[in-house]
Length: 76
Image 1 (tube, helix red, strand yellow):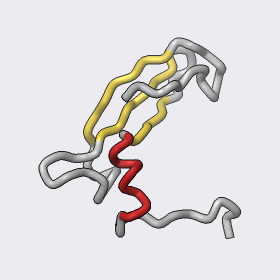
Image 2 (cartoon, rainbow, N blue to C red):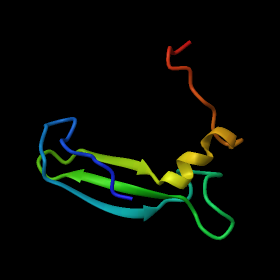
Image 3 (cartoon, rainbow, N blue to C red):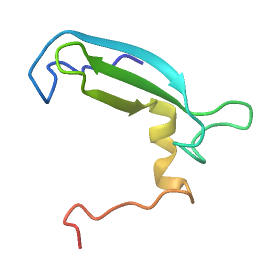
Image 4 (tube, one colour):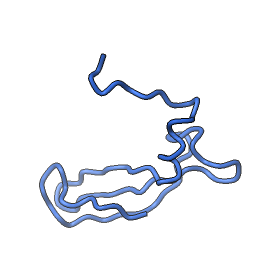
């Protein structure tokens, strides 16, 4: 599930670390009956910026999920 995350958008650093975690309450309705959706957590070793990336299966379920509302990119 490793995605291209470099360089860091905060400091332009290239020393990044990643792990995968399960956080069921942050991605409701996007997992399966027996498992929850996962995040890839990426941390910049230079500045500490931490980013969460939802796994590809969870992202694919967004358009059909009743738990998520699509936001208007124009903000209106």
